[in-house]
Each structure stands twice: as C-alpha cells, then as structure tokens.
Image 1 (cartoon, rainbow, N blue to C red):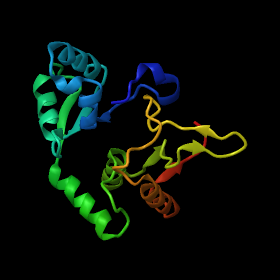
Image 2: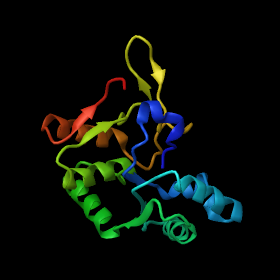
Image 3: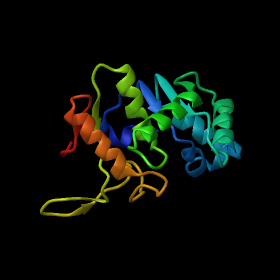
Length: 181
C-alpha cells in the first residue's frame, strides 16, 4: 500500500493490483482500534483502484488485523481480497524444498512468485538486498521508497531472495532492473 500521489513522477499512479502487509495495519493504522484509525484507513484505501490483496493468515495477530481490515473498509473501490493461505504455504514449501530460502519470504518475493505463475512478462524494479548503493558515491537505500525504514527486518533473507531473482533473470523468466529509475 505504497502512497501514490507523492511518488507519481517516479512510480506512476497505475495500481491494478496492490498488496498490503498486515504490519501496515499495526504501524500506520494502530491496529484499527479507533474510529480515527478506521477513517484514516478508509481514506488511504479509497486512493487505489482494482484489487487490494491482503494476507488472511499468519501469527501474532496478523490474521485478526487482516480480518478487521476487511470488516471496516467502506469503499467498494478497490476490491479487497484475501490471499489464499494454502498458496502462501505451498510457495514457502516450494522455495524451502529447493534449498533456496531459509527464512520466511518477503511480501515482495511472494508477489514475484505469484506473478511468474500468472503473467507472460515480469519486470521488477526496486529489489536490492543491500543497505547501500555501490559506486563512486555510496548512499544509503531505504527498505521501501515510501517510508523511513532503512533496511529489511531480520525476518526475511533478502540476500537469498535477490540471488534467486538474479537466477530467474539470467534464465529469462523475469527482467530484473537494478539501475536508476
């Protein structure tokens, strides 16, 4: 659920399919515990069109937050959908059995895996596992372009995910863009 308008020059405004990590409900919308947080959530959600996909599984309150989000949304646009927990688990098992990932995959990696299954072409932007850009001027890189997180949490193994993406790029399955936008 990246903000659109402030970044429209770089990221555009098209949003046919948007994902939302349940942690956003905790951090940005205070677990939807008040009328004020419901209003803010609905205001943000209404800025999107198409489909807003939310994980409807998890631990530590993630499932409860996701179900609450589904119940408080008032807008018919975007259409909110639940991700199938069986699909999430099958992807985890697939990448784990391949020996490729040793931790829970990120939301971004989940959607790349899903896109490979349903799209003819997959172009990726913004996947970079390092905390800084290399070259003549080393600069720090945010985890997401739209927030102040400086690096990925210890929950995910971004280096392992990136290694897989590079292999998929080399095989012609995805087009990994790592240069400047």
